Image (cartoon, rainbow, N blue to C red):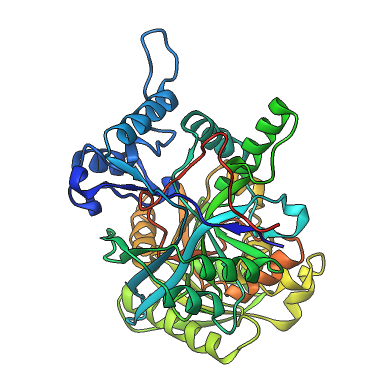
Length: 460
C-alpha cells in the first residue's frame, strides 16, 4: 500500500526573484556545462545554484570539495531572506503541463505533487523499471544530507481508470502558485489544495495502490540510502519522520496527456561497414524494406511514419519495427522482426521479449552487429537521442570521420506505458534509456524541506 501525505512546500518568492521562468531548470541529469553557464547568467537565484551537478566545481583553498556545503548555506540564506517561502500549512499540489506533442497536438498532462512513504523495491509498493548506478547516488546523497531537502520531484504513475483522484482534487483547487514556461515552450502550472476531506479521500485511495517510477530512479534510491543512514545513526526512525518520505509527482497512467517519446539509438560501429555487409548481418533477424527517393530528412520521416502506422495496428503488443539510416551511403530502411527470430530471445521473460528496446539491444546490436553491452558501454559506442532530427544531424557529422567509425542510426517507436507497468509488476528492469516521459518535470517549482522533529500527516 502507498502512504501519501500533504506537506509544507517551499516555493520561490516572485517578489524577490522576478520572473519564475528564469529560476527554473530541467532535472539535473540533462544539464551540461554549457547550460550551467546559461542558467547562472539568467538570474542570480537560479535553481542550478542549489541543485548542483557533478560538473559544477567549487574547491576551497585547502583542496576540499565545498559544493554541497555552499548549496546548503545558500538554501538557508534564501529561506532567511524570503527568497524561498515555506507554506504555513500542509497541502497537496496540482501540477498541470500544457505542451505541444511532436505529432502536432496540444495536450495537457494533469498530476499531483505530494509526499509518498518510502518503501524498498522488494516490498512492491514503489516499482522501478530501470537500474541505477552507485556513482550517481553518491553525489545526490551528499547533496540531500547536507541541504536536508529534496529539490525535485520523482515522476511516477499510478492506475486510476475512473480518474477519481484528479476529479476530486480539481473540485477544491485552491490558490494558484504560479506558472512557468520551459525551453521547449511547455507551460507548467501549480495550484495548492488544502481541503482536508479531499486530501483524506486521496490518501484512502492510495492505500491499496502501487506507484510506478517513470523518471527519477536515482533520486528515489538516494532517498532510500539517506533513510538507511539515519536509521543506522539513530537506531530507529519514526514512520512519520520526514526522512521516511519522498516528494513525488503522480500522474494517472490513463491520463490522455501522458506521453512517452521514443529514445533513438546512434550506434557508432568501429571501422567501416557498407550497407551490403550491414544487411547481411541483420538479415537473419529482420525483414528489410528500403525507403527511396528523397532527402535524408524525408527518408527518416517516411520510415517513422510507416513505423507509427504499423504500431497503431498492434494495440496490445509493439509492432517490433525499427528505422535504420546509414548516413555514409544515405540509405534508409524499415526493419520488421521476423517471427522466427523471436526464438533467439528465449532466455528473456515474455514481457521483455515484446520490448522493441530489448529486440534492438539483444538481436540487432549484440547478435547481428556483435557488439555486446559491456563493450558498448566501455567504448561509448551507443548514444541516445529523444529528438530524431538531432540524432540525424549527429549521425551525418560522424559519417565524415574517415574510416574510424560507421554511424548507424536506429529510429525507435516509444515504449508503451502499459509495458512499463508489466515489466515493473514482474520485478524486472528494462535496458538503459527505454522510456522518455515528456515533458520533464521542472526543478524549482516546489521543494520538500526535511525538518527534524516534524511529523508527516499520513494514514497508517
